[in-house]
Image (cartoon, rainbow, N blue to C red):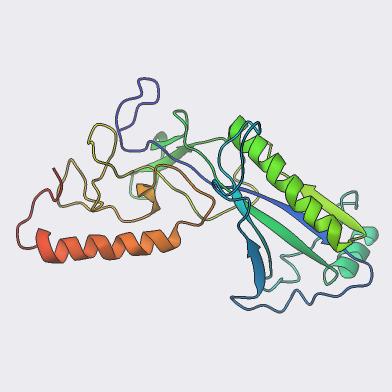
Length: 258
């Protein structure tokens, strides 16, 4: 198990989340039919992801992609209103009715670096119905992610202004992390892969260094969380691991990497 105080151990280290933010555009006379959606409906730009731009003097590493898309806005779940609208009451209802179909977001999915103090371990107190310890997550974003989110969200706001909305909600991610509201599904780390058992939990075949008949397939293998979702690479690694199991491990069980 990883010990953040001593910086030893491998299981649970390098946990990272994502750094999402957004700019919501509101219009008085343009209708977007946000309730309609398709898998490829939208536009993504990659100019501000990874190392696709000059980071000189910015004070952060990483980046993210910008996306203007719709997944089919559900009337109860999705209720965009301009900042300053009351949280409830008749004015709030009018704003929801007005802007549900006259707004859309530009979302930014930003990277998140892993840190010594962000990790996963077994909870010493709480257990599940079978008496097993629950997984405990210790996590917060740091100055790097806050600076990155401010810069990226400002770039998105500049794009939004050029579209001509009557109002905008600009929402960089700079607050202390909380699990509420929902932000992302894509977690990484905890069982990272590498070439050294002293600093990684699994080898390049996602096979446990310590227990050769255990293979850990998933985004847990990634040491950082980049500006892209990990899903495609996870799928490729799954095929890679399965091929190694079928072609090598089943014929001669044991470590696949030295």
